[in-house]
Image (cartoon, rainbow, N blue to C red; front, side, top):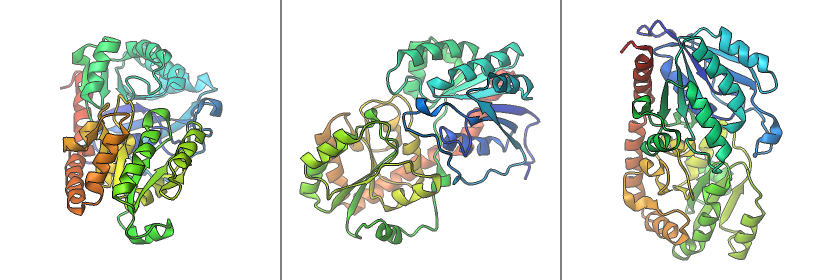
Length: 390
């Protein structure tokens, strides 16, 4: 259905949509929200980059996302990493008044640089949403190439105030070219018909077990070992506590396996070390009593955090990046790489149903602040500014 108040403008969004995985969850929700205001040409990929560059080990598509059947959205899945002609073609022949590029991944630099530069040469503005202002792995190559890429930008969107300061300090972007627009929740994952007790039974979990969830790609900065080292102290106070670690391996698991055995935690750690398809994500959040984000370092906002917010789950987060913005009460913010602090905070709330309910209510407030309606309105204001129509 075409929205009656849609502006008579066409915008191009450069990013990924399903079945490509990458940044598709965010782009999926953003595109749906903006489709109420604009006609959208979404420039996506048929082949995003060679598998050997992907630390997760494979690039299989995820065909379990909900469909996007919007008359105002035209999806162009033509980009291929091995075909520069596809980059030039999309840049030259996509009809749009501006380009809104979603930037997050170093291997995509040649494609993004080509398309954004051609848009500027065509006299059309370019907006970047910078999802990772600084790379998770602290790569100077990412920073240097991002600096070159940003020369094509008219305006930049980041998700947190920390990201805004980093753009100013590291890339010398003028403050008047920066807007802070939060990462919205990822509510399409929620299955309102889900039966928590039935899913627990299917996953071999008892009704009385207290489930701590650590969800998302297994990467060094995520603090997986911090969560494991915190578990003995938690079990000493809450013997029926269990830690679920669910996500695709981006590093060797062996050191974590040795740590689990060393601490005799085999009966308290449940592993799902693979990519979780979109339509299965809800199962893990439904069974969880508490979600944790013990990240060592982080400079952005978390897609997994946005998912936890969608399920209105209680959260404990590290004091890094935009994670503290996902909780209302400071006592559920822990210092990074501090297993004792994490264990104390988890034990404080995990056996207290009233406290968990209050944490869930606070998360619901956060969810309302991450409304995609509001995000679309803020993004529309940015578009009007760069187009000179405000």
